[in-house]
Length: 278
Image 1 (cartoon, rainbow, N blue to C red):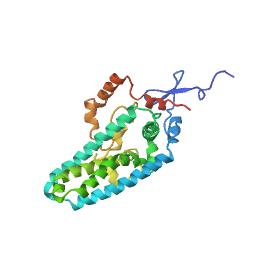
Image 2: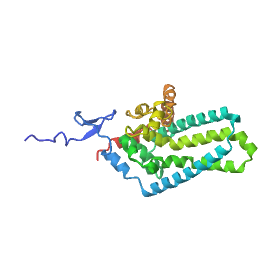
Image 3: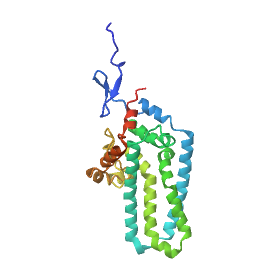
Image 4: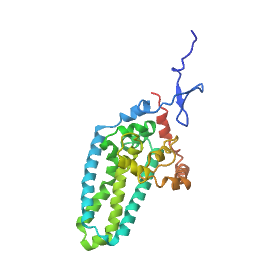
């Protein structure tokens, strides 16, 4: 019998496009998904403490959202309807840009090994690139907990404003509060919208309608980001800003500036996790 290792026993390394290769340059099947060694390890880093933080943030967020929506309804007036509509659209655009900035930062920089932030907040981004459909298996709490956390303080400040200002002052600042509420709502919903963009079966018809009309992130649109090395189309709320930001080279310019100032290369930790073989 011939000596040496069989094809299945030879070690493999991932290529830059997501494919895997034997060390003797023979291509083999790509290794992504829930069975990828890196994906399994990252999934195991989800802790009960993290789960508790997500539960607390979701409860606080829902309570504050309802409180603020109630005050918006009882203070509504047609006097500034054009400014209200501008505020709502402005909130959606700002949320889309914020989603891109956070997504780009977590995808591109940092490490799972960072104290506190690594396992709690960078870990899900690393897992998502190795196992993109993992998010579709996350429940409501795991999907939305971190985004709810980001909006708790602004929503709490908004609630305080409603109970502390006079009706006359509220009339003047009402369009601004509509902007803040829209921003808070769409930041809160961003990861849920992201999850829907990876869900190809069983979506409600109204979600498909919003995707088809590009009111929220469409599924086909988001596929562009998931082409290795995941360096573009980071905005995941509506996706409206992806094309213009790409045309002006926004993310690559930021990466160039940071690399020039710090010497750190983008996406090093992300690629490290894709290389894991055990």
